[in-house]
Amino acid sequence: MDQNNHRSRLPMRARFATTVGGAAATVSRLAGKGDGSVIGGVISLRLEPGLLSLLAAGRHVVLVTGTNGKTTTTRLITAALAPLGQGIASNVYGANMEAGLTSALSRAPDAPLAVLETDEKYIPAMVKATSPKVVVLLNLSRDQMDRAAEIWLLARRWREALASAPGCRVVANADDPLVAWAAGSARQVTWVAAGQRWREDSWCCPNCGSHLLRDDDDWACGECGGRRPPVSWMLYGDQVIDPSGRATPLDLQLPGRANRSNAVVALAVAEVFGVRVPQALRELRAVTSVAGRYTQVNRRGCEIRLLLAKNPAGWLEALDVLAPPPAPVLLSVNAQGPDGRDTSWLWDVDYRRLRGRPVLVGGERKLDLAVRLEADEVPFQLVNDIDEAIDAARAASTGAPSLEVLANYTAFQQYRAVLGRTQ
Image (cartoon, rainbow, N blue to C red; front, side):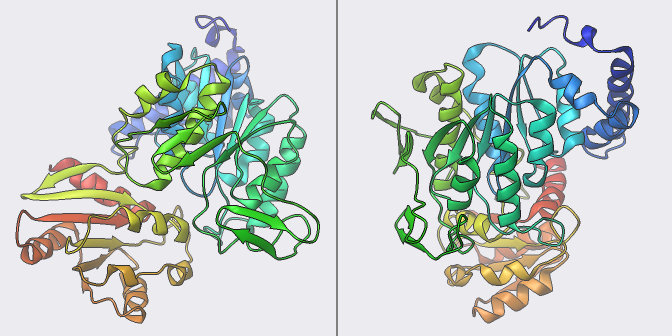
């Protein structure tokens, strides 16, 4: 693709739409209403409904989807492709529906590569609109059931969409039976052993409905013969094993097994573009935070680390990377639109591991969370805001005060906005 002329080749109406959408995004940012990516994309699409396809034409597009890890994996893939020395468009702030993807491509009209986080529900439409070179499938588990489809239905829609995209390579997590079944219709699949710690949504065969036989990460169906595909890439402890069988230490700065899994997926995608493991790893090791996740800030003498978890699978991983007891932790849950209105998923999380440390509870649905903690016999203290939580953490600390903050999406963004103003 001629990087200098892509935007100029857009039809006049499309160029006008991107200009107006960009102006709306700028106004939104100046008004303090976020980065403007959603409103900019919405307005652009109102003016030119086919804009996403026009902007994607001629680019190598990577779509990244799954219930957990989309934002982090998108960031890591973008980093892993940096050695190519080409411009990369990406929705770095996580706006992952059509408007967000449109806005991301509009902001980088001449970038020949695009790495785009995509909401699970929108994969069929986005595959059709962008003709991606690569689709990344991470996992599928229950999330935001008040708005999202049942995950078996999502898997079926993914499978149908990928069957209709013969030129697309799929990089898929072989350890998740639903993902493996969805990816099984694709012509070209790179299978990654990325792990699946949360298994409560995948005890049945997605092909025939029979009970799956599971042995560690391996799985098979005794009825229809479906089984875990043979993998090319594998996470083994803190090492990645590539298709040649070579083991290389990851040595990431991002914490936890989930991020090591995301990094292995990013390396598999980088290979599709010809980036070798040592080159890509050099970039991955430089990533310290992702859209505020894992950020460490100091407020009023208290060291605070921000962690994001949106559903049971995410909380399972996030609880593993908490600083050990007796470090205080603030748990915060909202139930706004982006979070999902239903908080019944709190009962799927095992909070007993929080015993033995000060636990603070905040957010708009703190009483829902308080009832759940009470059932698990975890002592807690209700707080109204981050400064009240800091006061409680300081009172509980015997040394330098610290606080781990574990929040779902909108609660996380609220804390991030406050902490960003005073560090």
